Image (cartoon, rainbow over all chains, first blue to last red; front, side, top):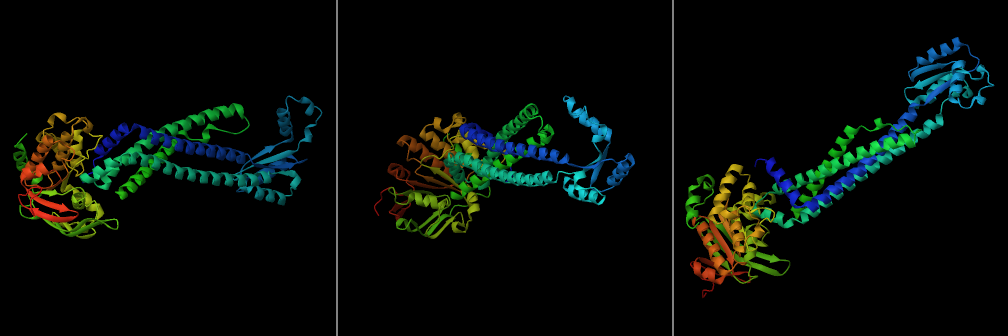
Length: 294
Length: 254
């Protein structure tokens, strides 16, 4: 038998119109599932991005009190050749003092009485991977630096790493639960709509319709419902994200929340695709289960 | 409408070629069929029955005598507890579940409660039976008005079933059963919900369909109808076949 797409789509649309209430139920269910799932994605994306930017800030600072500028230069060029190092910035005594003055501009009494030499020259080392901070610090110690003259936030890094992995696993778990719940909810909504039409399906079978022939319009119906619900939810998620980023810039200026953490287009596509897949699986399962019974 | 049915359908070789079996072949055969519901409700007991191609047979008996059970067994809606059933040369127990739809396309069926799809118009209801078999849209578009004209409903194509009278709904269901020209047409109490005058029209329609070569089996307890038609009558009583008479009446002496 040839596959008549027009016929099945037409049947699906007609059913949607005639069973408006059931369709609204299924669309709403999909909407809520995808909205919750999408918000989960948002939270996850922002947390990942914040963690990422905090970790990026991690650098190792080596202070060199009373060192000549040649010594600073030679250390900088040596460190620059290490594989773990992304970039090296030299900070002279004058620069360190100027930075301090900049930072406390409005409290001049803090630095008015200070000599320039109070702040030691330093080399700031940006790492390619924050996990390497310990190794770099160890190498610097071989170069004669003591723990006192090094600043590398080891504990912060360790804590961040563990938090990152907990948060990631938690989010993966929650996402999985949401997806399972979505399939169940949607297949339940569709089961209701099938139950409301069981007589119709029985008649179709009596007239000689194969399981596939009966099933296909229902699956298309589930697909269309899921598409509508998921699209609405996806746009809502994007809109909520914009509002949140806007709000956070005013309310949480020190938290590095960036609008770049969420790619609107790919999120939109992902949510819609996930919704449609859930709808198709849900409706397929529930019709198949019903067809097996008669 | 009267009389036009045979001509139209016999000349339409496109569909009927290869489908029509010659008169005399056994179309439906029950060999020692027993059907027990649950543990002890015997619906049919050792029924032997043969219906030839092209026959018109009444299946009569009181409610609960097993008429509907025979119809449902022919449609393979359920399995017999014992014995075997052959329909159009196929042994039903050898038909796997997924082949049932194909089997049912060879059997047009008409029910007491019409079993029309409420969300579809008259034309769509008839068309559905053709869509199921994957027929071309063009064929459907020409055949559906033809057959609705034949059953006298050409003016009600776009009406929904609940806008029609019982007799009209039954005509739709007969049109649907016959539109693909199955070799067998089975009707379970087709006039059960209809008044006597309307019933006569329905029976005439079934008779005319029979004259195109289709085997027709009508389960009924409509005494008058059976007596008027003078066709083969198979009588059931509490699941047993008690009488089988050519040109019989509802209550012939045994």
